[in-house]
Length: 171
Image (tube, rainbow, N blue to C red; front, side, top):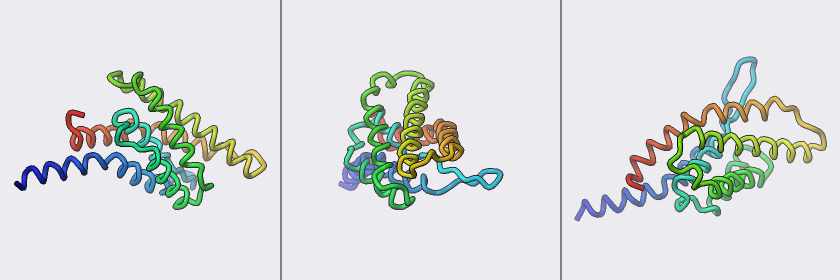
């Protein structure tokens, strides 16, 4: 009697794990990393999570929750409200539309797709923030975020893969 209940609980936990990871990574996204010369950068970790889980478990990534998590990230970070949900849903749409291309292929192809997503989000963010500020904003901060997000992607995906195999085996 206890074993079937435990198995159901483990299965339920596994099914909410992708959304929980997106939420945790959204919170981690607002914590700046210190770099030399006093620079700080905030890798777009929630973007990585949305991209990965949309490709490998789109059934567990409801767009409404992605929007909500993006809004929470905007509130916590003090960003323009609505910008992060827009970017995350854009990544979700791209990953979902290209999902078949990435499944079963080498990691480099998924990383290349992520490169396009990060490039697009960086450019869109820069344009929107520049329009709101009514002047082009300096490119250093967006370039650092782009580079760190792209370079951290393999490490973060390794964590997602391990979690995926452990909590959602055979799926």
